[in-house]
Image 1: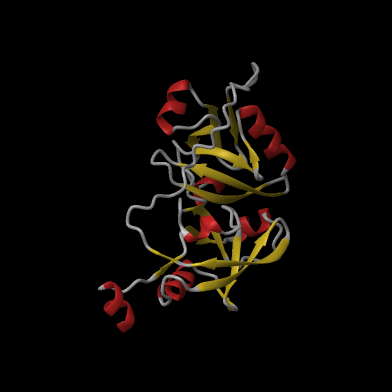
Image 2: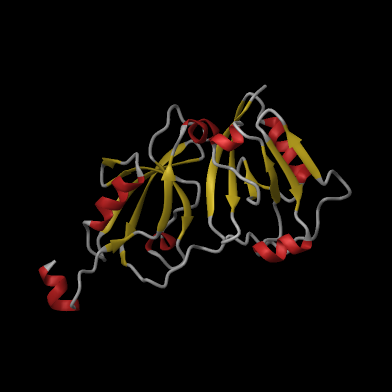
Length: 228
């Protein structure tokens, strides 16, 4: 701290550049984990330290420098105790495998923003005359295709909008609400209602990992169990 103050006039705390969340039972099950553990990367900060390493949204961080982390504040507190330029070792879980990654911490830039979640792929409308909305009573969720205005408002080219969430349902328990956009399900892109219906059908009796985006462009991963 003293050296930082002498050199820079301020303390240059380390910053890893990720948005993170807890791993609950549904997320763990949807990813094939034996039990909830670690913390999930919800998003990568543009030009942050993690953006220079092989880390992806949806990865689970199990350890940092050999220390287990199961709550976001455990990782945040440890990283904040280090200075910019320090290299940390992460153990992550991805696609059923554990792997190690090194990240060199950067100083926090107050102007950094979360990586855009536009998910643009220059694709055309792929609904092909199928369903424009669908209700899933067993999880308490209704979704609809995006209108051109929705795509413009959310700056997205694909996805389905949650138009209704049933009170006391599995969807409400997972903090899903009307107005969220589902852009991925089971790590597959969702272009329309038909895509989403097929993925849900294939996950019956299991758990499904959803990537959702709000109107401010914030994204997060949500696990939801699909009954038989």
